[in-house]
Image 1 (cartoon, rainbow, N blue to C red):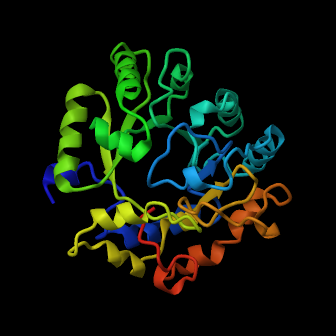
Image 2: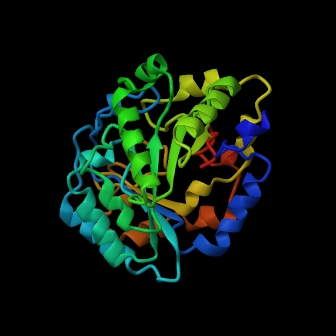
Length: 315
């Protein structure tokens, strides 16, 4: 792989991944590495590799009371334990008018949590997102999946005009010192040439932002979104299938859907729906995290783990 591409390629380190997962045991056996809370299931995109367009969970919204319950239970995590937290999943987070309020609650109640903001770029409008900069240890991730109009429309269901306008505005804020968070531009890997062009374009137009490339992945569940894109982007000599022999870093994370059920990992669309043991409405959220302790202790190969045997994502 071209060194210029390798430099911006993330979630694709097959040489050191297993060792890296092993190292997580020292810090995250008792408490999670990352927490995601899906506050609602609503998006203005129709990404070809995302389960949202066909999800039966469309329109679900987490009640304020449940959000506050989750955060309050997370306060039992020692303040010396640093972890990441994000309010997203299959949605455009900035469509939720409560996002600012919820983020403020997190900042007040969970000072050891680093907030990770996400957007598809359509909501980078004046007066909508600038408040994020008050959280000095946070970052903003933008799913800019292509810099080509036709390809972006095919992948996400809308063009680039509004997204580029928002990114240009955001870049001006950063240059003026009015937005101080690191900004990361994220795109999936299609092929080496497009990855190289993506990096060059982004660095030229928005030099204060960091472009990254991530592999496509197949979502778990009945929809299997992303499978075609992943297979089309992997050549016959790819090392991706090595992942079957690895444990998974996602066993150290905690993901909560808008309906209150947790999921197996970050790419599990359906989650443990209907399973009382994984319903945060009635169980303590940290008790649910402890359900996966055996996996975190033993770190078996995915190929021998029923729910993970076909997953090749380095989460």
